[in-house]
Image (tube, rainbow, N blue to C red; front, side, top):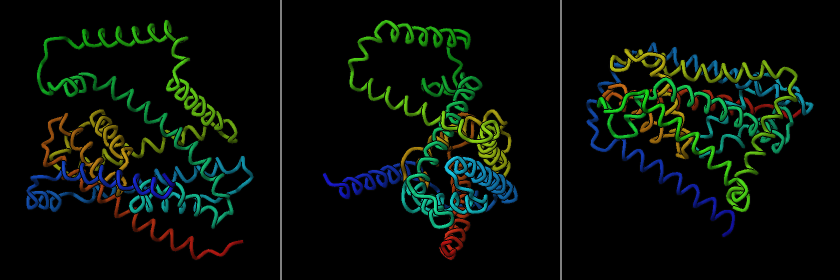
Length: 326
């Protein structure tokens, strides 16, 4: 199978996933009711959310400049911001095409070779993955009961077991897993799948250790935390835009955010069109928000981000293309 055919099949699969989720989310939708909810939304809060999101992209751009310095490149924050916005812009048209577009922008403005730029993007992705795992861990601890009921298909039911008993069962299961792994670790070494996973984990660790090369690693980590806090606050402020979601607290927002982020990670065209809607809608259902209201909220937030990235990313693309090489 040649590379073009393989790439074509991958794109077809990605579009099929997005189409399936969009159909699942919007089938049976009362479009008049959805439009009414969109019309009644307080867009002042949506604007606040988008401004906070813009701050997160500026922090991401500034953080990226710290990764270019060890390679001998001094990149201005504005050039880095253009690259970030162009990357997000391209993700709406070419699934997962943002990384290469971002590196191409830096090649144009600062002559950073694409392969070196991709190396920094991989490091950023590894750090972001760690941040997401931390958030998922916090959500698991704060909303264990809700998630347990959701997974077991008993959302809203009281259940026979106490929360303490469920925690004990979970702890015993985790300890049993570690014990089994320790006892059979020598046999696992003979499995090709285990060896491949181990290689991936070693590469993951090496990518994270590259952070030590930056001049201010603590600042780098603080910026990483700030980026994700802005992401969460963006969703939280947008809650106030609709009466159906205005009552949700920060811990509940964290849960919905985590599920929505997983929806974006799932390959789909339009930067998570369909998958994001489904994940956010399911997250809001956990806290009693009606399906139609959750659908409207996800549509508004995803649409607002899409408009922001298409406008700002388009402007950044024109500005970068207009630059002459040094």
